[in-house]
Length: 360
Image (cartoon, rainbow, N blue to C red; front, side, top):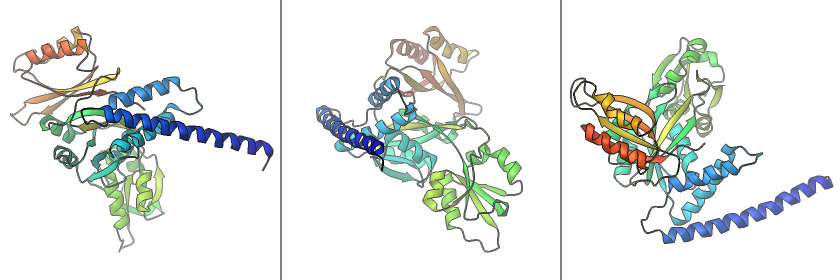
């Protein structure tokens, strides 16, 4: 080993010792703060978002902002665990993109509550069997997850945060020859997101939708071929590792910018972070121009609307509810004023939650 290399490694060792000491000092402070809280809430998404934004703003590199976020999410997660190890419910099995979103938001210092469906995530939280839940709500290619919207309408749970996750699909199989693939299993949204690639590469393969991509990978892992034909799953690299499958192709999604947005669900409100969103459900009164009248206060008070999605109300034929995302927190003066007026004009207004905008 050269003397110059040894000097650099010695410097790294010294820095590691300093980092270890400082991280433990941070942990002691976090534990002290936890003992001073009087509401029992361990997870403060608004505070964590503020920390990550400040660090990203001060980041001079060479680490990327995403790398900085990953490091400090892990630090905050393990500091949180000194107060209580949180349990996080998500759509399983292990290896789903919902699990990836949960890990991105909460770090590794949490317990996994693996659910068999999105409905079960809601039921698990409502029954107090998990502290928080992570559910998909929309995809940049395929649009809204209707089931999640319908459940939000009827659930008492609150939105505490959001996570955006770039989605890169892989074709996984026990087989190594892609030309032998005759059946493809995946979630319906993932099959749609890879429609063009599948049409060009495996036009004759039969496609079948299942509850999740990781469930598809698990099925392929357990499948025994008796007639010489082979099946494949569309899932993540992590699913390939978990279930011991070969990656036949990577990044097979039709849109390279394919991204899914997930919501963090809990039972408590979240304080303002300085860069927030508020999600609403509203129903218009049955009269001409009702929708324009309903949204007018948002425009007049300078509140930006970032999403408007309609869903059948299931109360009557051609009767709809509207899901709306706006910029700002419900405690902000202009947002609060606008919502008061909207409530007077709507036949129903439900605030699903105000929460920090996603941090990469």
